[in-house]
Amino acid sequence: MYIIKVKGKAKIPDYIQLRDENFVLIAYFRADRPLKDLHRYGLEGKEAPLAAVIEGLTFGKLQKLELA
Image (tube, rainbow, N blue to C red; front, side):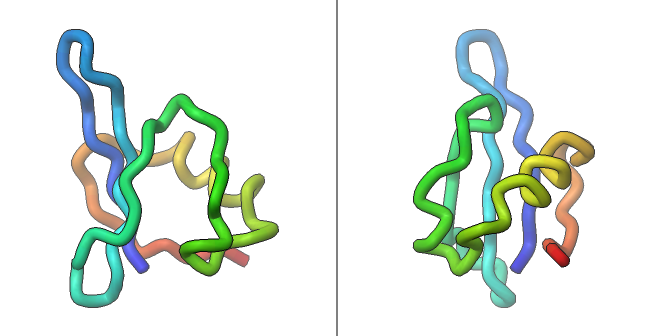
């Protein structure tokens, strides 16, 4: 799975995209909202590590999502 942080413009907020191994979009959510429904993406129980990854992301840089 891959993750990318997309910079919003004007009134549009920043967003996070989760993409599968074929780069198909599987999730799209606001970066400033609490993480919920992570069980849909196989990430249940990993809210804290995912929040830390999101906080450290650079805008526009796609990276492999590896949570311990």
